[in-house]
Length: 444
Image (cartoon, rainbow, N blue to C red; front, side, top):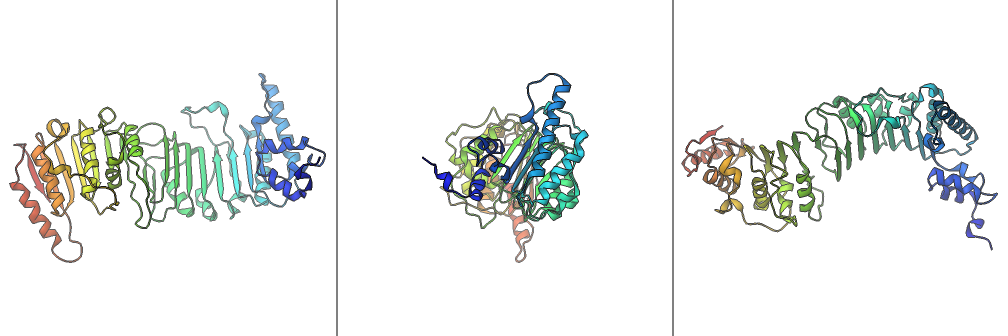
């Protein structure tokens, strides 16, 4: 009894085979005489050196396996008859003696209009946590920069010219690993690849303080895996949906999930944000209005005393809306050793979630840092709005060791005397009751 595949024409079978991993596609050659060579027409090609390596000990035996791999690749390319390749992957360590063969492989992929190109020249001996910064094993050939249809590019231990990335007008997915990548080069890369939606950086160095930001940035997924930077990395991507970070914890962390006004945001993320905060071990933290509004929806209400015990400087970007109230109180309660509180009053997108009691109207509870450690409070963009006045009253009433309250009034915004009104309200704060006898209020 014949199977259904027997009635399918060869092009359809080849299309089906192309959905298989390259190794699995090769295994179809044993199914029948008809299938013996069909897999050689697959549009997804993967040449991986490790598939040819046996468990051998001597260097001579390993080199023989590498030569077998090179011979297989050379013959496979010579026999390939299809006009188009969708995906091409080449994984080969220490290619120094085989540069010409590597270039021929890449040129083959480009000539066949490859859309997904994966070049991995890493040495498996480097390891995940190796602190070395090895030089690139291979230089990206010039022909690659002329491929305008490339949609996905992965370069590991491969040098390249960022200035020539402007030809990748269709590139949406980019992965760079085991490479030197300066902050300037990263910024240029983001400019030259305007359609980029996914960026993965693994074991990159000389990044300084990278900034991944831009008003037209389409980035939705970002991975930073064991990259070396000095103090911090900043992400300002309004469409970002996935952020994965692995590596050393910076002393300075800024979390800003500001969203574009026309994006519909569904669901609540209190548990996710709480877990994110719980993973931090920093001394300086900046949070945004979105986080303040989402924290009430966490299933766990206990403060993060143990996780944020080292935090001494907290910056809160807020609209001072009642929906942000609980999140504000939660952070103050969690930061038991907080010394400096910076409040940046900014226009915020308020989400139609359930309201909370405005904590700065209440007498209790009082955060431990208000009684023991909080000495400096700075409020930027003060406009004298009712909730702003209530917040200042709360800080004055419970800030027992506060030494300085610095009020920076909001500037005039086009019409009216906004600045003079704001300053008038700020001057009134001098007459509010205060818990700290040594407090100095500065207005600017």
